[in-house]
Image 1 (cartoon, rainbow, N blue to C red):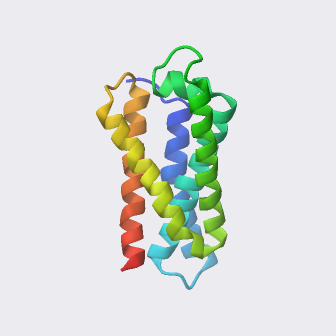
Image 2 (cartoon, rainbow, N blue to C red):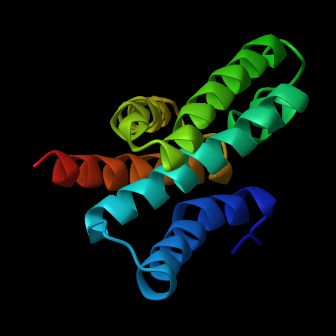
Image 3 (cartoon, rainbow, N blue to C red):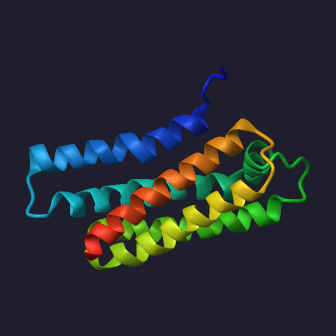
Length: 158
């Protein structure tokens, strides 16, 4: 079994550890009038879309060759401009989700845009031959956060 690197640990941190910790702290220590679903929605959106895509976006803008090589197994600098633009888009999705942590009216638009992004990215991985373990990991984690946000969004709207 291959040793996990910072990429895999960051996904685990932002998709599982931070949101679950935030939910527990808010419910047990801070106290709130929000429902469990509303708190979970806020934290998974903030961490899964806001922090995760923000970190990915900054990495893609600063080091686009990492995503090109490590995720998509593309050698050379030909993909650098496209990956950098992807990074700018990720920073924008991130900004909307981070703002939604503080402004609840931004949560549904942030969940729709961020969730769609992860769902479509997951589909892209499904239809592309897997060149690396990181690409499979990216596909699984994309679908994970997509379905978490979808379920929470449906519960919030019902």
